[in-house]
Length: 180
Image 1 (cartoon, rainbow, N blue to C red):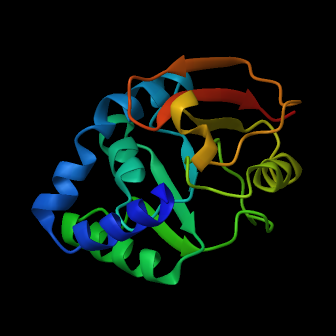
Image 2: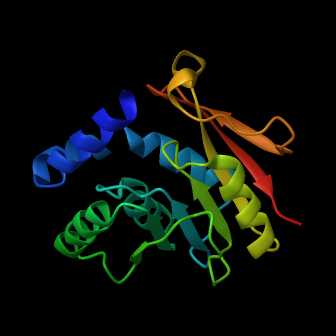
């Protein structure tokens, strides 16, 4: 119920500079804290899995930390809308957007990978990241306990190094893991 609503709202908001800008505002603190959790530097390349129609996470990562970002999504319409927003903002050279299934090989290494709350299936995406990328820092957004029934959970056997809690609607915390 929540996921289709968010997808629909992002579709609508992606057509408006005002709405997409307003939609991005609450994420500023969250993304800044995630970047600090991963100890981002402007030399890092970041993969965002599940970028959606309004690529606010890649936009904010680029603005706050100067990183190059590659965001992927499985929805071709979301990819098209995200590219339009990035072109409009002059960020197309810093944020690459691709139609890609996160359970398939990524083809290039990244210093950091971030799984959004909407990205699924989480166990298979994590497995693929660990298989493809060595020495990659992985961030993953985890649902607030009140919203967990709407989002897929992470496997219980994952090794979390650190985490940061958020006071944010559906996102309860971001966890940090490393690949070997």
